[in-house]
Image (cartoon, rainbow, N blue to C red; front, side, top):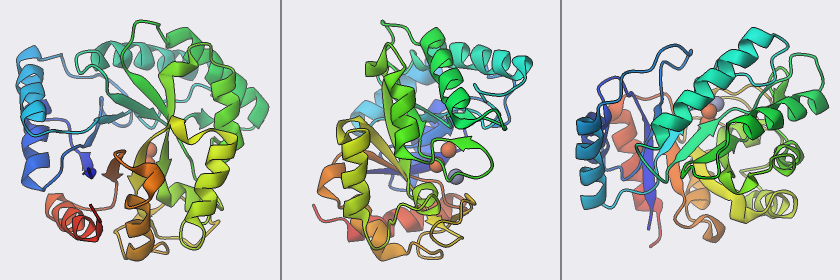
Length: 277
Ligand code: FE
Ligand code: FE
Ligand code: ZN
């Protein structure tokens, strides 16, 4: 089964996102839990959520991927920024339980000069504070491009975080094709090798979702600029190999390409044509 979708704006609620997803041929999607730059989330509308859950069930939606705000940095040097990250994570975990059993993706953080080890330690400490045994939500650490002082552009860094978290069964990884290609994992010429390495270091059983993006920049650029599928340095054929990879069967594939709904509809249509049942 191919679970494919894209990032959708969440301001109009879940039922609306479900409708939008269906209108573009998607059976999963990603959404921000709140304004991507942080700030207040909307009040929980249980009626909206229950209508959406009904719709998702009827249409066999795959796992959804919520995305944390970009401003969330558990390993900031500033205590206020870390406190903000904690507050947002606690609130988002509570909200996610209204959509039980889905994924919450976040950028592990930027160590801002404190060093990779210190960053990893602080991220793990934050996760240890917010994870609860009873939660049904799995937190996904996103593979990063390695711009600035980002933590998580090497599989070893993600593994080091996971190893320090007590409730590590609540953790998984979301792999972003633009980010890993930027981070010197060769999506175009050696994706098999990339997955082998991921398996050796982290374990393929922890790979739970894929962001499928082309990259404006060449291999190893550490820039994190997404391109439309086929308009970047990765290309449609390599992306088609990703969605067909036997190790990635049934994972949600989420487009985060620079598109409006009609553009996403086209990319989803093309990728469905490339998908071999
Ligand atoms: Fe992201
Ligand atoms: Fe991403
Ligand atoms: Zn990105």
